[in-house]
Image (tube, rainbow, N blue to C red):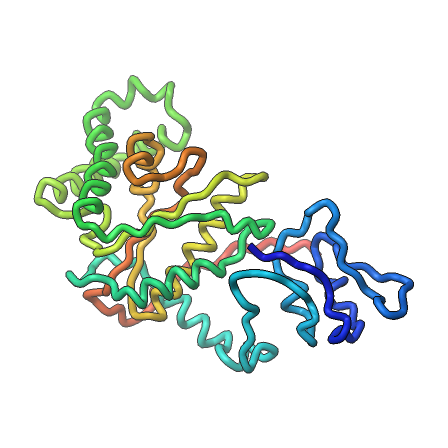
Length: 296
């Protein structure tokens, strides 16, 4: 874990950048001519974000961590590396993949995806997520079967939906009354009976993300950012992904959490597939315009 130790005054040029960017206001100005700026953290409130390390032009911030600071040519000119136009092409062409080759994900590519997820930002720099990578086919099949049990139960209860309406939430009530619900259940469970994997689509790898809950309920937001980092990294490596909501929900059951060794006190906030695509998308589909409200 990152530990900020102070300032190397042999390198410090007194630019005050560290004072400006520290969210916890742990850098401050003094009357000492030799040590104009100091770092004080008596109450251990540093969030270990590393902004001070990133902003210092002279690398004068002293710190300890198993990871080193990341430097590369072009740090100050990121638009020259990937333009907005090129980035938008990548973002628009990312698709949820449901057709995979029967081949394992190369280990080196898997490690790179985890590395990309590692550097995703989180609220208050919590970095509290954990991952379980499942490549065992039997375990993936088990999770797939467990995930479809709720669909089977929903189909059984659908004829009794009018009796249950007073006890359902508005969202579930709307779904129960929607005639499309029966059509979808019949189709998906019909595929299950034919031996199809309607949950993971025979993906060779499943990644489960879990974390403790945070103050202000930011853990789900952080999970979305972490998984998006992983999905975009996978795309850059020629791999496909899909966020599987039905598998995420099944982790509300204690026996499933126990089976996949999710620690007590942790919640699963995302489950994604990962594999080598067996199809190639040719273009990005249209999207409706964002509703924007301006307050000027």
